[in-house]
Each structure stands twice: as C-alpha cells, then as structure tokens.
Length: 481
Image (cartoon, rainbow, N blue to C red; front, side, top):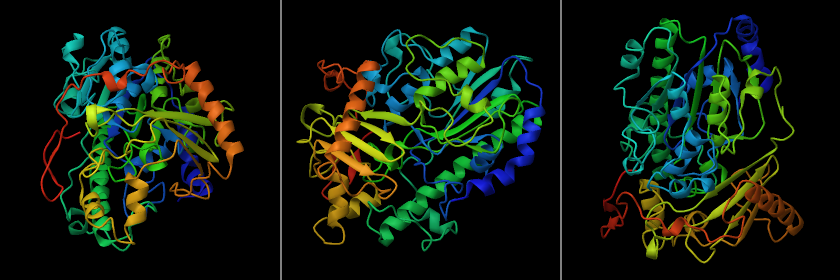
C-alpha cells in the first residue's frame, strides 16, 4: 500500500493549487458507484494486480477515506442509504434487497431537483426493487440519460447537475478467463485469507479485477469530459462501490470484505488535495454532504452526517473525534430460507475491533443447504460446494457458510480477514462494544435496538429471486442482483 508520505508528496502541488481556485455558489455532483467492489481492490489500497489510475488520481486530487462502509452489504439497501442519508434499519421495506420503495421516502435527488439541479443517471441506479408503486415515474437515482456525454451536451447553460454514474461492474457474472486473457497475472493475485488459495479462486478474482479496471476507465472518460467542458473544478466527484466483492464470505456479510468499500472524493474548488482521512464514514453521510455543499439544510430524518467539514479541512488522519466507529447491519437478501426469512446482523467497527451480533444464530448465514443461495453463484462457490469435505477447502467453506455464534469479535489489525473469533476469550471487550452498539441502535431508531418486533421478514419481495438449482448446483433461473 502507498505510504502516507508518498501519497502526500505526490499531491503537495495539487493541494496548493486547489486551495487557490475560486468556488462557485453551487457545485455539480458526480456520484460514480461500482457494483460489488471491496475496499482492498484498488491499486492505491495496495492490490498488486488491479490498476485503478483514475480512482488513485481522484484520491490524490482530493481525499482518500480508507475506513468507509456501505452500511448494508446488499444492493438495494446500500443504495437506499446513500440516497436517503439514513441507516438501513430506518428505511422500512427498502432496508432489504428487492423490496418496494416506501411512499413518502425522500432522497437527496428529490431535494436537489426542487432546488433547480438537473438530475441524471446511467445504468444501475436504485435497484433491484419496485419504485413505481410508491408513485414515482423515474428511478430515484435519476432519469436514464442514455450516456453521461449526452447528459452534459444537453445540460442547460449555468444549471448545476447531480449525476448518478452507475455500472454493473464488477457484478457477476464475469467472463470466465477474461482476466488472464487480458494479461493479468495469476501469480500476483492476493487471495483473501477466508478463501482457499487455489487456481479456480485465483482465476475468478482475476476476472473480477478486470471488471474493476473497466469501471475505473469509464470514470476517467467522464472526468475527461468534465475537464474539457470546464466543469471539473466545481464538481464534487465521489468514487465508491455499493458493497463488497461477490465471493463467499464477503458480500452480504459484515466482515470487512463485505461492508468496507473504496471511497475517494475530490472537489478542486473547495477541497485541499492529497489527504488520507481515517475517520469512519459511511453511505448515510453522502446525502447530507451533497445538500450542505448545495447550500441546503439536511432533512431532519437523516441519521448520517455531512462530510463537508472533513473535506474542507486541511487535516489528515483522524480529524473528528466523534468518528472513531461505524455501525452496520443486514436483514434479508435472497429468498434463501423457508418462509423467506433473512439473516439479521448488526455490527460496530472501530480502529481496533469488529464486533458482530447475529440475532438468529440457528439460521444458516449463507442460506439453507444444500444450495446456500444467499451466496452469489460463481466458480469459487461452485468449487467450494463440490469440495467442502476436503481438508484444504473445509475451513474456508465453514467460515463462509457455516452457522455462527450469537457474538463475534475480531482484532482487525492482527486479523484482517476476521478468522479468529475472540468473543469468548475477551468477553470484557465484547461486552463494551455490545453496549456501544445498543446505544447507537436505540439512538438511530432501529426496531431491533428498541426491542420492537422486527418487520423485515414480513415484507413481500418485489421481484422474483428464487433460484431453481440444477443437479450440479448451478442456478438455472433467477434475477441478476
């Protein structure tokens, strides 16, 4: 990973230049979000294979946040959190995958449109789910603009814009073998410690990394267009992902590779460049950030906090003493258990520890056997299913799909892949973090934290997610998520 000294040294000139640039009244917003990319998989974060020069440059021209989370490691709720500025447990149906959008739920796109912003989107916005029944005629992330180039070409003179730059990369399915065919090195792949280090997994990761590179390249094309049209200086550029990698033990889990995401933000007119801010930030912070930057008060229901003070500060490292922890959760993902119940979890993450509470430890976290349908179908999952009885594969399969205790505790610096549960050996730390988690859940109105009947398992699905499995364990039908 690049050192802070190297990072700052490469950015010193850009930092001085950005502070001197004049600022306009209302900034543009470009929100670029990949689909299923873990925090570790940028070249800036130290991955030896993937090349993400655009993400790296946005970070150098602005702020890199190594401790960012999506709040919920599942597409629909994470995107709902980003748009609403609220934690997923405050959002009713849309706190779970592929549900209906509650009527009356307001997003930052609604407020900015009312304030005169031009709103647009490409590809995957708020999804998957049903927004029409709420009375909306357009996707909450914005109307489909066809392309970012078309949107900019048709933008009225002098009108600020807010654009959702969505993508399906690196969401599954991948083109098997595409990474190696493109010249990415199998030998250089860093296999996360919770997965077996075998050629099948290495090849699968290569294909995933290739799609990250494609997303990075497309973001670069968007930034080139903004620079050519003179709009880049006063545009807030956010580059992130909706949740972690679609591999067993990552996506849909509250471990770091499931819920921590890459995040870089630049705003040349306002934000001093070349900083690494280690404060814990999350998806609920985006909406109040965009509103404050536009000169609009945050909506009272928002539970996130604006990042503007962090962005406009000159400081690096831990900037705000109140941002030394984050809370995350998960309810229902796929229809993977009888009666469509989910696997409810909450977690609190600090610089030193990750504490996870599993509310229903008798349920299977990856979905009921034999198919474990809460885990994305993949060459990796297929191999692990077929070889789970072998000594070399069994521990990885158990960590990813086996039943878990009610409490998990990990020392994240010594155990970056969360393999060694310390809840029983360090009960005093688990008790302390459990109490902190309870306090935050109550403060933010989580039904589970308030002792109320949790509603998520009772909500109807808005799209068909049941997967019919073939004799080889592969899905024969189902919706891409």
